Every structure is written in structure tokens, then in C-alpha cells.
Image 1 (cartoon, rainbow over the protein chains, first blue to last red):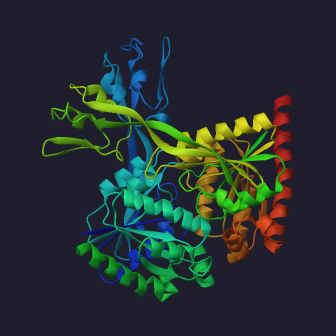
Image 2: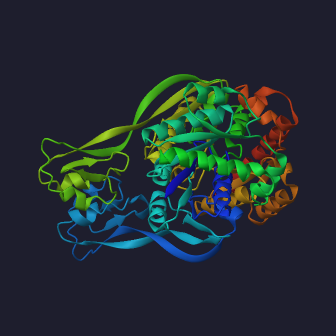
Length: 283
Length: 301
């Protein structure tokens, strides 16, 4: 049971391309693989894997509802809430669902037992399969602010598999932590540009903070400068793979075709990359 | 004052390069980088740091070990799996702690400290094209929405004080908390997209979000020649949905070359790419006027 996350500070560096092709390459070699799309704000893995969806479930969080007959408008709930999700007026209590972090504080603190919690729908999870590969994705409902509860549920519902490939969202903050936390290895996908390097440094900071072993894939390795390679060498970071820019791959990507149908890099080299990582994890 | 926000849904479509170039063309403006996870705009604006401040965005709980009796009450209340027990010693993982403070409320021994934490830094810099407000969220921190709102407030203060007419905002990827905080109450949103199924799909999601907040918007199609057929599809979608197509940019290695030189595309050199951005700027100005006129019409009605 190995869990590998694919992340990057910067968006658009090729996370989904690496994650989907890696998952498909492993599956083709007969491995039992689940691909988990944790970029719940913009999940795109399905465009390439084209899974048959067999199950859809809703994701909800608990939010408070006030029984005004019992409420004495004492204001303790609003005082307790660190997220300003409640406002107690003279004869009413306003609940701002989108600010609520679902901690249950108000519910527990209310001296009159006037608060109950009700589920509020914020997204969904779809699961299915694609040529023997297990597929799951989370999707945050548009207009909802909090991605982490959807990711959390997705990871809870994840089926057991020999290998789990997690496609993480861009950035280095809470939605990413939720996605990559408790995995065995982190693949950071970058590009050799000033933006790519700046964001790679942030992602490396995150990996180190989380104490996760990691390596770097440099995508479009011929568009940019040498500073990313210099940085990796100086910091003793392993460069797992370098992939040059290829117009044919860009075109295939745009149409939702798998890069592995075009270039062997995305089959053989990614499989080798996995074996290299797996060997390291087992040590 | 016009508050303009550039977003894309999908990352890496060219938002920041475009913001830098529009900022180079706009005359009297303040820039804000709301991608607080991975801020890059300052890298192409020849920026000099003027001010650096700590940002305190929330609180975190910590167990005061000498008072803790290992009663495990806190464990029952925490919904974020942040509290763990090892050999009867309780600990709170600061990365998992949501900062709700419920554990402290119910601790019978008053053994939990609950203090504000610095979750990032925010900056004001001077650049070759005017003031820039930007930030760096601490690694693995939450509260990006609060930090974004703070940056926008500071930018408005600077604009008000110095009589700037426009705020140009580089937005974060996605559709969640920091994106919502970046666009609420703004005057105009530009979606930067690419002719790929991924970027087009993300554009549609982000457009639905913009509609949710009832903000006027335009679109720019970057690398339009990678897949001309899909570019036509995006243009048709824009037309059906009242999105002004402000222009198209070809795939051009100058985009990366300018970034490597630490410059915006406009400041880098005259090229087909810079010309396409100048056309975009002209169309944008016209569309901003159209939106402004519509607002006045609505007021008169």
C-alpha cells in the first residue's frame, strides 16, 4: 500500500498530466491502482481518464440552526465563534453558513440547548473506473468557500488499493495540506521559469514542514533557464524526470487525450519513476 | 475607482504575465497580488520592498503540559482530529488545528493555551509601474481568504490616498475561499483561459462563480493557436454568456523569455505578443466604459 501525491506550488505545471499518466501506466502493468482527484475546486483528471461513474455521493458539513423559542439571546454562541458566523440581535440570531467552520462550538456551548446542527450540502464525490483503474474525484459546489471538508471526505471514502495516486490542488495552504497529508511520497511538478522556481521553493518548504519525502519533475524543461536545476542541486533535491516541451503533447492535452498515447515518456519513464520511488519508500 | 480582478480557475494560463503587462499599460493604478499561496507578480515588476508586516489571521490551541491531567475531554470535542494521545501525553497538531478554541472552552483544568498566531506576512512594494500590495501566507497555513481581504483593503486605502483610478488584482487559481475573497465587490473580472478542455471547463466553473456575485466579465484566450477549433468553441461560449472576448494571444516563447528577464511582456520588447496585449488593453478600456455606462443607466432608472 503506497500513497503518492502529485503537487506543485504553481498551477498549470502539469500535475494532472503526471498524475493521470502515472496512474494509467501503473494500472496497465497490472497494479491495483486508485486515482484520487483532490483538486476539488477544479477537478480535471476525468477529462483524460474518462471513467465510467458508478457511484455519486454528497458531501455535507454540519451548520447550526437556532430554536428561537428556546433562545434567550444571551449571545454566548456568537462570543464563542472564532469565525464570526453568528450574530445575535435583540430578538433574532443570524447564522452565516458560508463563514461557519463546522466546529460545533456554538452547539456545545449554548446554555439553553437551543442550537441543533443540520447537514449542509457543499459538494459531491464521484467514483468509478477507467480501464481497470479505480477513479474518484471530489467536487466543491460553485459558490462554496471551503474545499478541505470535501477533500477530507474523499480521502475517507477512498477504497484500499496497492497504489494510490493523489492529484493535489495548486498552492501550499490548507486545501493542499489536506490532500497531501499522510501520504508516503510527494512528487512536485515544476517548470524552469522564475515563477515556477519561486513557487517550487514554497512547495519544498511545505514538503519539509510536513516531513514528507519528495522529488521534482521538471516539465517543459527546455522553456526557461537553468536556475531550477541549480536550486535542486544546491538543496540536494532529486530531479526525478525532465520532460521537454512538445507541441504534439500540448495539442493532445488540449483535446483531453492521454500524453501516454503519444510519447513513451509518459509510460515507460513514469513507470521507472514509480519503481525508483517505491524502492525508496520500502527502505 | 475601478477594481479589476484577473482570474482563470485553472492555474498557469498566464494570469500574472498578463497582469504585469496590463499594469505597464495602465496609467494611474495600484496593483494587488491576491495569490497569497504563490505570489509571483513582484518578480516581473522590478519591485523594491517598502513595508513588511506580520499578518495575524487566527488562533491556535496548545496544551500546557504541566496542567494537563490527560482526562481526554478535549479529544471528544475536537472535530478536526488535531488532538492525539501518546503514552497518556496529549498533543495538538498545529497544522490540523482549525482555531475554533472549543477544546479550551471545555478543558476542566484550564490547560489549553489559545493564542493568535502569525499566519503570514504582507508587503507594500514600489515597482516600475506603481505601488504593489502583496503577501506571503505562511507555509501550510489557513486563513488565505482573510489575508486576501486585508490586501484589497490596503490597496483601496493607497488608491484613495493618492488618487489612483484603478486597482489591478492578480487573483488566485480555483473557485474557493481566496478566489471568492478576491472578486466580491470588484467591478470587473477578466478570465484568462486557454483552448484546452481543462482550461475551458475551469473557465465555465469560474464564470458561474462570477455570475453568482453578479460581476461583469471579459475573457482573454492565451495560446489560442494551440487548438484553433477549441478557441472557436470558447468564443461561442463567451458570446452566448455575455462575456466580452477582449482578445487572443498566440503561443509565443517570448512569454517565458520576458519572465526570465524579470520583465512584463510590454516592457520586454516589441513582439506579436506585446501587440496583441495592447489591443486587449484598448478593448478592455472600451468595455470598462460600457460597464460604467450600464451602471449609471441602472442608477437613473
